[in-house]
Picture 1 (cartoon, rainbow, N blue to C red):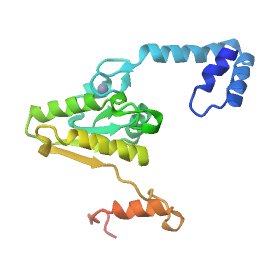
Picture 2: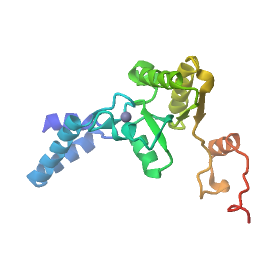
Picture 3: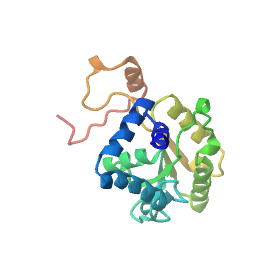
Picture 4: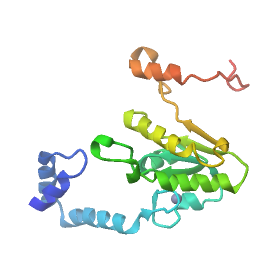
Length: 209
Ligand SMILES: [Zn+2]
């Protein structure tokens, strides 16, 4: 039990007291439920592997998204972690492919660019630029916080020197006011972002009053 408490305590957001509670909970629940958790962890780790093209996780190699011929291979959304990819997929906003960095730059925690799949991305983009004259679009969707912004900058800096980079279009996802929110309740930083990220108002036949 002490071993389990130690292991649980290593998980993000789990303090020692919570680890002890979870361990004693797992001791009291039906045996199948507790072992089901152990098996789920084991199967996930044994069956999912990193896609050699995009750095995402899947049972097959390459992953289903990289193999999907219906997706634009020259549009790549760069995300920090697999869960970001899942969220964007569920939102249905991306008709291209992904690149999973495997984290974000966090010098204070010892996470440097060599811990991310930045070189894999650079090789991938270089190959796309060498392939043909069409544009390659990179949408950098790291989280809109200090570390995510820093990571976005590192990605852009690494790729801007690639041969053919004049055909590489890099954009950063917008930040600012969430749809459906109200200006009067927004934090200052959100309002600053919203102003910096303002875009031309397009009047279409559907949007006209
Ligand atoms: Zn892939």
